[in-house]
Figure 1 (cartoon, rainbow, N blue to C red):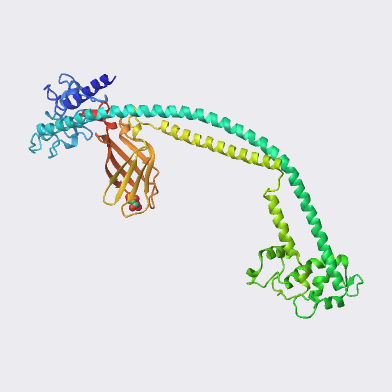
Figure 2: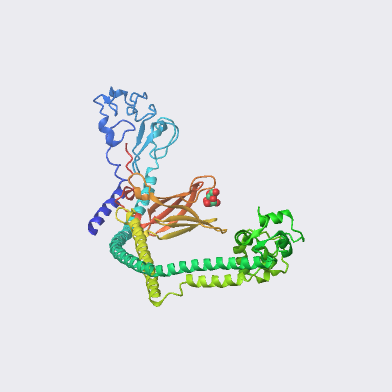
Length: 529
Ligand code: MAN
């Protein structure tokens, strides 16, 4: 197989070399400006039919300097038809077809000078010299392609191996994934089982906690009533079970604004519509209003700006006792020292935290909690493993979907990066990935495009790579880059330009492009119409 490729390559090289000399041969009589291949269409013994088949004219109308055919085919040797072509034989070099308008226009277009036969312009025949140069260039290219094609074969081999390896990896990963999913499902079942047991065991604790809470709430309620009644009894000087206005005045504590008087507003605040207050009203309505006031007087609240002096637990208790309390009530020492609520509350809080931390489960329950925790951890790990495998699968699938050339010759370049520096920037091409630009004066890398597609034309799709969707250009579209690929013995970035603002053009050479069986490889110079 390698041998037959070489035969092909030799054939191609042969074509490149001799396509420049093959035209010297015959001197078949033909009208001026007609190529050898089209000569049979111009027979002096017959009428001439335009190439488009629309009109037939006597043969002596051909090249009579009057355009008869719509396609210009009757005037190959004059400038009469706007759309005609003049063929120069250019013996010694490449034949050429030039637009009819250039015939006898005073400019030498054909290297054999035949286009200026009546303009008076003397054209030197430079075909031999040009042909020599072209043949030398063709020879150079043929040798380059020959040498490059060795390297290209290696790239093809490695590219195929890489692709096969990726396909194998994918298969393996699919297997790994199936196993990982199974493990994950098992872990999930185990987790669900253990969580059910854990829940069951904790239910008892939660219920007990709930009961405890209710009990505490009831205790607090009772304490509050007790406390209220103690205060009631203290203010009810004559102990008749009713607080009167006189008694309230004596008690002093109802003087909200501390001005030494009980005004109407203060009386209304505590008494509402009642004239006297019995124990029931005191406990349910008056005490909740009075207690925060006592706490203020006891120093649990300070005027604005002095809050930082409040001990944290006092603050918490104060909030609980009456969050909407206004702070302008300055503290002064009073009977409020009897209120030792804050300390109790703090202890209670500590106890709750301890319960919530779960340090108090019995051994069996604790084991169930630990088992469930471990099962949760293992399930999370198993889920992560599946996700990681899936990410790898996606990556390999994306690579396998990439077009690495007809024979995978570009596969090994995937992910490889090459740099090019000009005065201002360092450019980086990471093949099949992205293109970036970094200013030499510092600053972040600017994306000039991500791998998009092959964009070569004329049967040579693999001559241009397109990288699109780079960083948006200021006031313009996203940056993009085209990478023009040519055959070279070394893989490297040859040049970077910016022909249009934010549209970059890179010249990149690689042996992967040294395919002399492709149209470019043969450097076809057949330009006959
Ligand atoms: C930066 C570079 C240039 C580009 C301008 C557009 O300076 O990316 O290549 O032309 O931005 O504003």
